[in-house]
Length: 327
Image 1 (tube, helix red, strand yellow):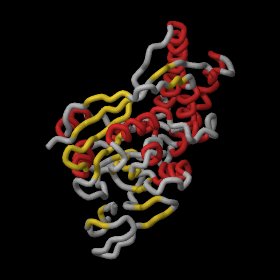
Image 2 (tube, one colour):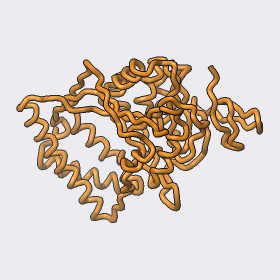
Image 3 (cartoon, helix red, strand yellow):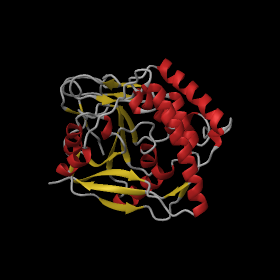
Image 4 (cartoon, helix red, strand yellow):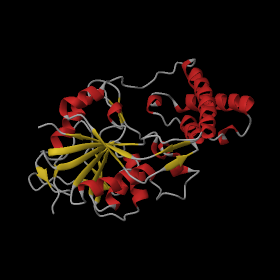
């Protein structure tokens, strides 16, 4: 089956590599098809957005350090990908919008689904390519802007979107694009991790971790705010907009999946240390480093040198929130 895209130059329906109408060739660099060369972050004018070029691998710390040898471990994302394949079959086309490091795209492709992993950040997609290891001919990595998705109308069976829409200041324009590329009756799917019961002892452990982490985080952001820190965030109500274009969602649980996570402290500290938060994209690296040094000294004095080893405890499952495009 042939799969079509839109030509960035003339907007004709085109094959992946070149346009038969105008002759434009889609650049392929480091296994990524470049449908745009837009900046990773745009914070002025209309159609603003926050990409993650400056965050890169630091968005998922296990890629870079404590779980560096477990790149096949996708947890909730693998369970959700398996559930999609089970529920909708594998003879479908899926767009993973805001695909980042490929955490959702790779399990979908592994199930045999034709998956287009789209992100504005070439750095994130570079890492996704490394993680995929060239194993999946059905996984297409493409640099695109979510405001202007280079796919024909009614071409996708499913669009997967996980924590991307809050990174744009005009979510309705992106949601309209999602609905445009979906086939009639197509689905927008968001992955979830519903909490599961834990013991009283585990709950107390988690409360302690959260209290310490909250204290450390407050100190970190107080330092930043004392040095002219300006948060980068879009306060938009995209959930209300979603329901203008999609039916109310229903939920599907991945039966039999359960995961325990105890490294919340280490995970969040890593993101503070590296500035791997969307709200820090206007913050100079020099200020992030200074804030972390001050915060690390504070935490060591108050909680001991091994404070990063404080364990939390959470047990959760996997689920799909499924929105059907309105007729």
